[in-house]
Image (tube, rainbow, N blue to C red; front, top):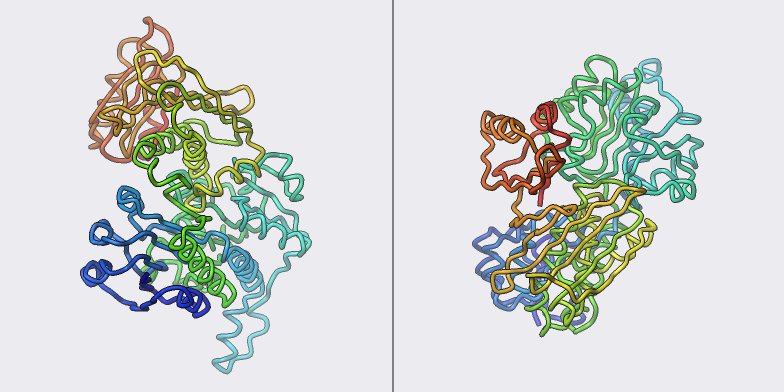
Length: 525
């Protein structure tokens, strides 16, 4: 078998592959060049430089697996790979320690003005008074996102005798207590923390999470860090907060546009920057290279795949019949997880009809993957979804029923958080290929999910739906589909809109001000 490595990879990983296969290392390929070459290979190993597009996937006649030496898979068309039965794997754990250590290094360098003092002395200046620093001892460190990297940062902050505040909607009070972290809200962290660091994935819910409104809440002289993903902290808002003196310093490793040569943040003397170095340690590069190599070797030799992004462990002959249900369950998980955010205590899946003849375990995992991806990003896969749910003390229950009413098969997903529940039922139609949502919280629908949707809780009475539609139209947001749960006049119901573009938060807030609108939530799939 043949393996193509199209980005720079640590020699340890390449040598592992060479023990088993013929390996070609060819970097810097254009899309057309990769399309021409990929036909001959059984596996492709990439980092962030190679774009594995649909065109590349379609040309890959023999390809069985794409291995990403790193966490993000934004450069891989996962849907195209899934449709062709190609496994996509990543290596989510290989660089976590490096990323946490880089965050602490950036914080300390920012506190003591180390880069600026170094540059000054190198230019033959002796400016001790100019570079007066601050201690971290006894200060409040706010950690937004308490996943693995965030929890490692919290531990290291505690070792520096910092008092750690944390926010993560998927971490329970019990888990926070075990970490020694005071669990609170983003707003409270902004008000109280001396240092604020973000460690969430970049999702629709976390993009621009730290914006002008959040900076306004912060104490004067706060210091902020972003070694996670560009875009979590709004760069323009940060620049303005630096100009006003609200923010005394910033340490930034990641940017919306990279290289960030047009970023206003490069113009500030009290901002230290690095070129996306969070994972750039010798150990991390070896870890991710070896992990990617191990996944490829196992996949090509018939072994288990530990970090599959898109395909669970299922017998090959079962995949054609099961794939539509896997896609439906994952979509339902993403849908439900955006309607009810927070620390779920229970996820229940009820299966009925013809699907009972199939292996439902992977379908449950697909639903968990969809739910958890909302908070944890692309590090969630078909292998670790169960363990991640267990680590967050989420109880997962499966049940079966023979009753399906008029549908051959149905899946019902119910999320529980305290006394709140959210229920969604879906089915597969169109010769078993099209997933549909047929019920939300007891209201009946027939929804084909699309990339952008809007779920609006409202009272069923005149002059409610019309103003919503007019508001979207005035903002050039096209409605491609609309369904309303049927209830009596004056009763509460739900409207689901398929829209052709994202609905900004400002429009959502305006929509909520319409009399009769109870809530409006965007869903992005």
